[in-house]
Amino acid sequence: MGRAVAGFWWSPTTEGTPALVATAVFFSLGGLAGCLLALGVAGDGAEALQGYLVSFLASAQDGAMAMPVGAEVLWRTLRWPLGAALLGFTALGLVGIPALVSARGFFLAFSVASFVHAYGRRGLTMAFLLLGIPGLLTVPALFLLSAQGLHASWQLALRAPGQGRRELPYHREYFLRCGLCAAIVCFGFLLERYLVPVLAAGAANTLLR
Image 1 (spheres, rainbow, N blue to C red):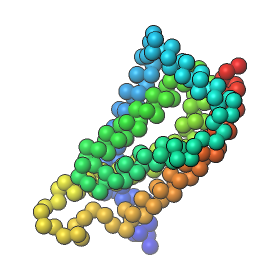
Image 2: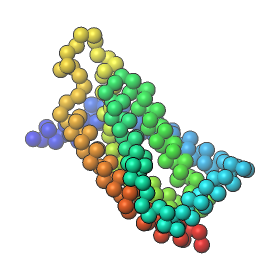
Image 3: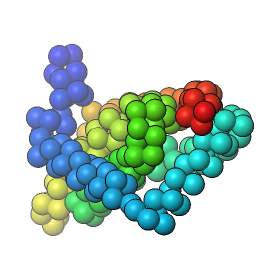
Image 4: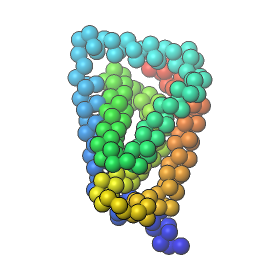
């Protein structure tokens, strides 16, 4: 029982510490690029971004965000972890997973930095309500899927021709972790679908005063 629990929780680090570190590094690099781009926007670009944020907050304030389209929210929530999970079943994940987590870090950091750049501390609060609450669940799930997927892709790339299915880098704990991440992402979807719009509408009233 102890070995099963240890294998479930610690396999991504004991078997694939380099994969976990690589995931964090690429996510951080993407996030750094997103921050620099958002904070470096000037002139017409800054005005356009400011106008977009004001329009977005106005729609939230008016209640237009009270019930976002479920399919759009589902796709927005699911695309990153689903991409990492699928890429983990092919050697292409060696390139695809770093690109995926870099893009996720970029867009997340760009959105947060844009709010902060435009509204200061109040913008940080708004960014947390919109992105941080679901991100507290979906980002760790993405890290877990990316780390084990990158490790699996590496093992696939090193497989010798003719090796049997027993040599594949997929085992019971691998799929259990996928199931756990799926449950976490679904809960994150419910939060973004039903809770976040309500909180965002209240925060928008404060920002637009």
